[in-house]
Amino acid sequence: MWRFSVLFLVLYLSSALTQVTLPDTKHAEGMCIWYGQCKQKNGNWLNCYRNIPKVLAPDNGEIFNALNDVCPWYVNKTAPNSTYTCCNVDQINALRTSSLKLAQQLLGRCPSCFQNFMNIFCATTCDPSNSLFMNVRNSSLDIVNTTYPAIDTVDVYFTNHYTEKFFNSCKNVQFSQESSKVISLMCGSNDPCTGQKWLTFMGTPMPGSPAPFVLNFTFTDSATGGVIPASMIAHDAPLKSCNESVNGLTCSCSDCPMVCPASPTMPPSKGSVKISFIPIGIFVGVIGFVIYNIVFSIVVMISLVLTATDSKGEYQRLSRSSRRSFCLTDVGQVFEDIISKLFSRWGYFAAKYWFVVIPAVLVVVFGFCAGLVFFEVTTDPVELWSAPNSRARKEKEYFDQHFGPFYRTAQIIITAPHSPDFSFADSQNYKIVYHFGGVFQQDILNEIWHMQNDIANLNVSHKDSNGGKRDITLQDICFQPLAPDNMNCTIYSVLNYFQNDFELLNKEVKLVFTVTANSSYHIHYCTRDPSSLNATDLFIPCMAEYGGPVDPSVALGGYETVNGTGQYDLAKAIIITFVINNHVDTEMNKPAEEWEKA
Image (spheres, rainbow, N blue to C red):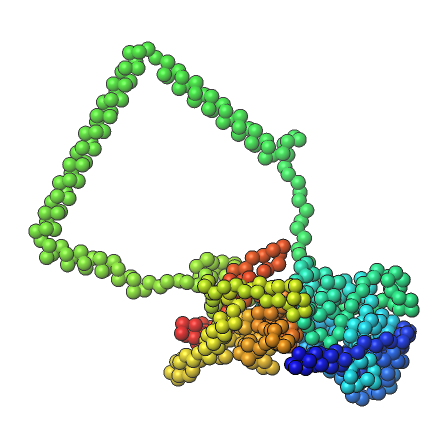
């Protein structure tokens, strides 16, 4: 009986997603490809297919204000009531809370790059003529709301010039928390990343991803012709280079090499000094070699002349040499006798007057060792390897005074050598099987969570300079990059792929009696795209609790690398890194030092 119930449920769910055939889409200036939201898919809304003329956004109205906040270049501020768009407030808010929120955290340090990123998604969402470069491929009707079809897949046409300019403005933006580039986190496993790979990755959901629809990007050299359908034009809007300012703000030198000041030019070389036509270096070398050979030849000739004597002279020389040898032997014997008598008398004296010798020796030894009271062990690598007045030390001190010293880190490395490896089948294709190291077993992950949680909540009593006592926790000393909006500590750990939530760590998705998604499956996809907002059927973002991504190369260890790609699933160790604030004033580091010792 239950089989028929399951079959009925499957048929019912499949009927809720009905593919529809759309009429011929009109691609023209001022025509929209969509407007509004129609249906939810995996918790996200799909846009409605509505091939209608662009919609007026009244001045200071709800749509106008939302558009001015997110995509201000589509607002006509000079002529009231002349702003048109192809999106409503719901679409703008969805854009604001999904794509742009994460992008601002990662790319916001380079204003021109972030604006270009917004330009792309604002164009596809709200451009009043988006039908010129977008074409609906697949759509479906919701069984609850059949008014308008919901778009599942859309083709987007961009020129290579537009794509590469966007990529070039962002390719050098740094992710300072991990000393890497942001592009390496946002491009998935595409290494090296390009503009086309980046957009394709962002527009193509990973298996099991709840992305609302697919953006199928196509890139062309020209705006028309070729693979571009008739009456359509590939999008090629103006974009800013990374060295151009946005509202008076520009990228830093580390994020945009074009902003960096030019290196000083070295004065042209005057050329080498020559004697006649021979460089002076070669001339001096030849002269030196000739002089050496002349001196060496003279010495050899003199030696040969002195040794060319008769046999009697040779015997006499040997006799004199023998006498000198006997003389040296006598001197050595005398010196040895004196040393022997001296130490014999000292041994006799020490044995006879031991009650005087031992205390005297102890006094002398302890006197020489008294300096150990002032002995200090230097463990700071800066103090060990750089002189106080060196240029490197001075530059570091200048940097620390103006920008703050680098963070402190506390690490825990966890292995599970006796835990067996295991496998898990892909929920979308059961022919694909993923193999995991034993450290990813669910019971081990749970134990690691308890340990990490206990450490994060560890209380240490600290006595300040005024004599007062207070309890110190990780929350008081940790690095919080998004404070005060997000007060969570920066913890690099695979558990942060679940936002350090125990319930999310143990969440499973089952189809009848088969587990289709669990923690190891989620970790597999998060290590490929750490910045994903929703990676698997668990509907859990990969972004960490503190608001940033967790680089798998930092959170995992003991894995092999194949063709430049880490095999993170087979990692042998899980690494937990607590990032702690560091200060120039050593007194301010005392709470952190006490917490680390505990």
